[in-house]
Each structure stands twice: as structure tokens, then as C-alpha cells.
Length: 134
Image (cartoon, rainbow, N blue to C red):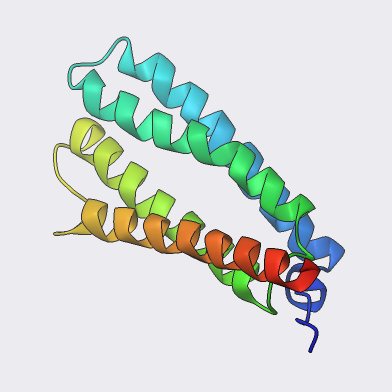
């Protein structure tokens, strides 16, 4: 039994372009927040947000390149979970510094949990790929 690939789900040029855009946005915002962290009070929170953005930027690029890996929809789900989780986590930390308040109660932990779920999805896709080749 073969495992269907996700190319129809995450495979269109538009979908891949959107994931590459997420990588560029994540990287650019990460650099900007890193610079701000050096100059603003509360910079350690901004530095944490910047690190998360910078760590995930290449992940989005890899997800676009690996779109045919794993069961149908798993990488699309992982990408969405990472993007929403990253926005909540980094957005909440940045909001605390720049606006003086959080986005909403539990925004950062919810974002962190979504990022973990996204990485778990990538793990599932990798395991499925290994099993398919066996």
C-alpha cells in the first residue's frame, strides 16, 4: 500500500509561494526584532521572539521544498500550525514589550503548543516517508 503524497494539498505554485513568503516574512521580522531587542527595554523578550522567527524561517523554506513528503495534508497542517503558533508566540512577546500588554491570555503558550504540534506533524511525515521506502 503506497502512501499518498501531499503535492495536491501543498503542491500548487501558489501554496508553495505562500510558504516561501512565510519564510521570508519570518526571517525579516526576526532580524528586525533582533535589532530592536538591542535598543529597547525588555529586549530579552524581543530577542526570544526574534530567535523563534529566525529558527523557523528556514523551516518554512524546507517545507516548501519537501511538499511531496508524507501522507496527504500532513505537511500542510504542520505548516499552518507552525505559522499560527509562531505568530501567536512571537506576537505575544513583542506585544508585551511594544504595547505593554499581551495579545490575550495564554497567547504565547498556545502558540508554543501549536509550534510543537507542527513539528510533530513534520516528524509524522518523515516517519511515513521512511516506512514508504522500506
